[in-house]
Length: 190
Image 1: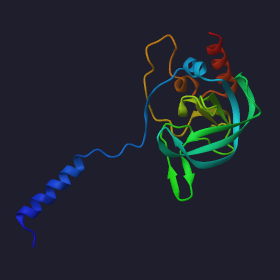
Image 2: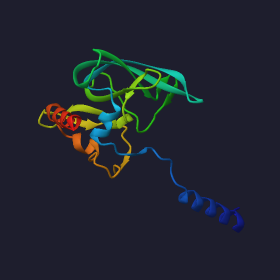
Image 3: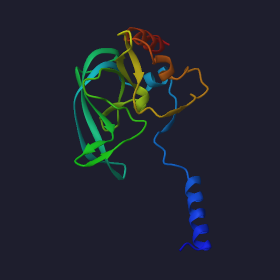
């Protein structure tokens, strides 16, 4: 038997639950221009991830899962790069525990891409600007290989008002690798 008071409490709790925001599944970052990515990078390369492993590490004061991906460099665009590089990204899976870091570059094995790379103060290589520095190279409906943003790229706020230019992801998305290389080299020479 439902009392009036019980029905009102249930109705109120249901209404409150509908008004609560849902969990966010994305990140929000300020968009970086191609010049900003270049300025923070030691190298820009066309590379292919060939092997990956994940492990727990302490970053700051927290334990997190990180993934180390071995990439083979097919072509250097800017800067000096070794033929093989170990790149660390945040997130991954260790045993039955997985962590997803929205906004982080998602390097998929055997999927070539364009990568802006930088080294941390500890000498660990990672993708500059997280997902903003990673572009997948995928075939379009006509078979042309074009740059696509990293799959975990979050929401980007407009770039800061500066002479640095428009967002790199807007400038590079949809270009072929030769077109993207030209854009990057032009920005590098400025």
